[in-house]
Image (tube, rainbow, N blue to C red; front, side, top):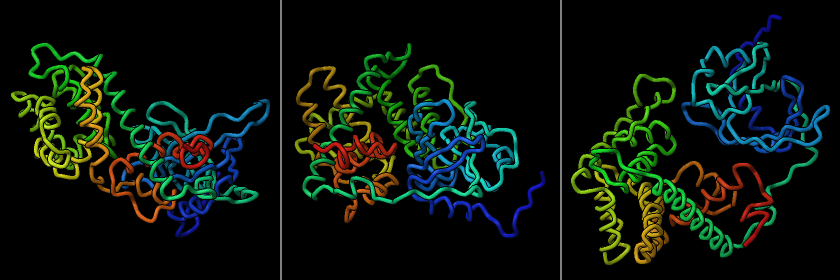
Length: 377
């Protein structure tokens, strides 16, 4: 069948239709299965899928008795289903979280497939999407927490995030052994790849972590940069160069030894922050703060638990609670809007609480389990 596109029709038109869909809109997939739109997601970046973190629910059909678990992932827009292959997305790992291909024209009988081999269902927005019976705000908006209670909840969630990160690093630390003839000890062999991955937040984490493992001498295959580019993007190259500079410096002085001395010796939490930033030079202040909060302080808690060092644990926790806010990002902006905050929090622990709530419940729209919606402290 020959499909003629209307003159002037653009993917941006398709996107506008998607963003106007209400929660609980019923969509029909190309194979006839009904699919409920729980959450439209957030706009994607300049590279990769068009939508991040949408939530879908495949409804029972035929002999299927119960709905499948909700799907959380990305959405890609194209005018035609065949554009998935024309654009080479089947070879691009950036599209390995896509759970729905939204199109106007189902012009291909070949199902879309991701680089990891998973099939991607498609739906056409020319098939009339059934509107929801009624629209309602989310529970956290219908019954919002009072300001003081919300602050306490986000502080609690922020501390849960610190514990979660430190326990994950602790498990890795217990399993880590330095490479033979390596200049780095067990601690740096764990910390440096964690810092490398932290440098890639919002970018190519698998590539950065593999690069960090190679820098500490561990045999690991470094994957291709996302997008199958012959080399990393300029921003990634600058961050990797900064990491390499730190590693060269720490071959003699030791990375964790340098950072732990600052945490243990500095007389005040306020004085420790600039000292830690200086130890992470040539990274700029914003990037150093991100690594301190997300990697260095959780790692300090992991080491403290391993060595039963109460002083180090208290210092790391006090610094985490007192640390000034990090730069705004997509999740803190989105969650501040979701929770109807007048402005984004200026305290790191509160920001980390927003991340915790998002990753554990809001991303998948599991409102019944949310600290700010269903399950209250």
